[in-house]
Image (tube, rainbow, N blue to C red):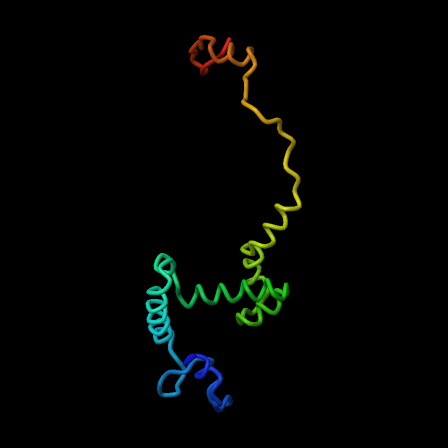
Amino acid sequence: MALQRAVYRPRDAEHTPELFLNAWGKPMTRSGFECVLAKHVAATAARCPSLRAKRVSPHVLRHTCALTTLQATRDLRKVSLWLGHASTQTTDIYLQADPTEKLEALAAMTPPALRPGKFRPPDRLIAALRAPTVMRSSGAVNP
């Protein structure tokens, strides 16, 4: 709740366009943001033990937000603009990382028609595997 109050607090956007400000109203540094994030991750991990095994960093949050925006809008240009990329080519990697597109592709595929049961190799294959191998200078040959 404190984060929401801080984000939505009225301020002079002309002088401080940054989203996160420190206790003195100045733009928060990367290390300051990492420190605040680590504090909140530790507090949350006490209530959600599975979070302890996860890596949470500003980069991971940025990546997660970009993927969520891409899934919601399906517009790579918006993601590129939000991330501040000079070109959409830099943002193309998010197309490869989007799991919903992969799941849709898998759902559209029809599985091969396989007969249930055990594999029984033909007698000819067993005979070829049991045949003696003759070693020659050019390599192994199976008569």
